[in-house]
Length: 269
Image (tube, rainbow, N blue to C red; front, top):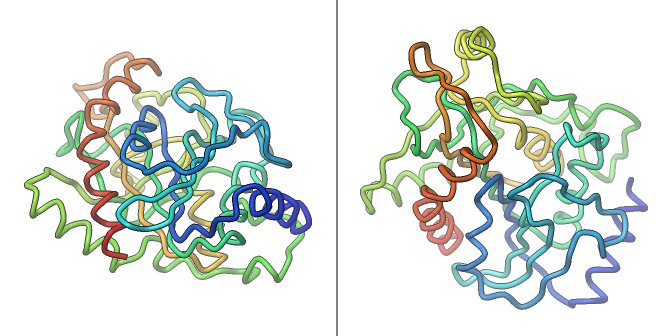
């Protein structure tokens, strides 16, 4: 994995000669943030050595280099998921590449289902903790160059970044929740009893991504911030049939608010 990471980093550096400070991973229906980026370079995943290819609708599948909030950024317009059949080490491979390119902060977004009865469709939730039910990306042969074998996860999401984001949403009067994200493998949406279970164990939302990326980032010493758009509800009495297309539509409607938060947060780094 280390050799593959170095190969990919060398390819990108030789092609673009850029050192990003901030990494951004954009989830389902949230790729519109790229419209705010002063784009300098783009490259499709299929052109990058050792990169998987995103197979999910709503995930365009390209790396974007440019400026946002006055900072050099690298953005993944589309991520990889365990349910696509990739080994979990490949799902998180781009995070390792980001670290070796120079990224010092990681911002992540996703679409998720709310299991907290106080949540509404279209709400934004700042993630302050998670429960990972996807295979851990650190399982397997360990390489000290990537960080500790047993990384501490007492603060998976950076408290300073969370506090700054809360100041931003307060200033702009954006309704925002804060809570715990539960990550499952998918690709099925949840049953009513599964929604109930995720709420019982401490979850506020449930989705199919994010936590493996955060685990790898924290192993490598990258501070993280993550935000969910609540696209459906897993609350008794509010559970309805859910489709991927509907999730995309709801995410797109709330994207403007998420974009504002991300842009201003980056400008404060």
